[in-house]
Image 1 (cartoon, one colour):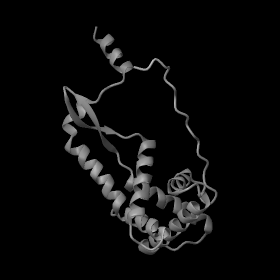
Image 2 (cartoon, one colour):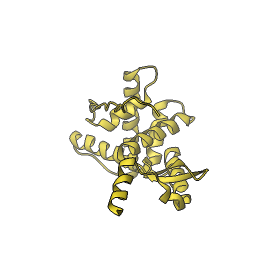
Image 3 (tube, helix red, strand yellow):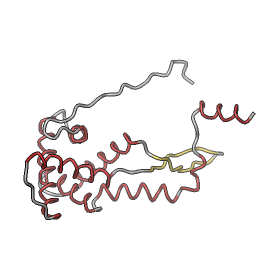
Length: 186
């Protein structure tokens, strides 16, 4: 055991992006970025969001009246994509009684967003289209429809958690919670 005091990790506060005013778009841009080329990544993300939005409007048969309404609808579309991609539970390996078990645990909101964005970017990169804009736009439209690589990855995580829900009672509690329960039992 280390004798050093526990050091809290720094929490970075992301600024919203310029075009849509969304922190989620900024996170997606930073995940897409390679070799520190933020501007190239931002251009790819904005163009793919616009392309996915045009496909979304065409599929839903919606016509827009104002530009201010457009940004709100784009952010609604991005939220729908994220809700279809974010996992609610995941499995974590726990050693118990000399054996390793896959224990399902609920996922916090920040980790849901991180996993969802990571799966979205990875599945867009694995697509074989001509440009990354097309790849990301196609992955977003597929996520809206409940298909695609990112949604498949999320469903795999849920099915693994569902298959191992027998072991849900093996979740280790932090030391502070355990000692409080023992004192109340006395």
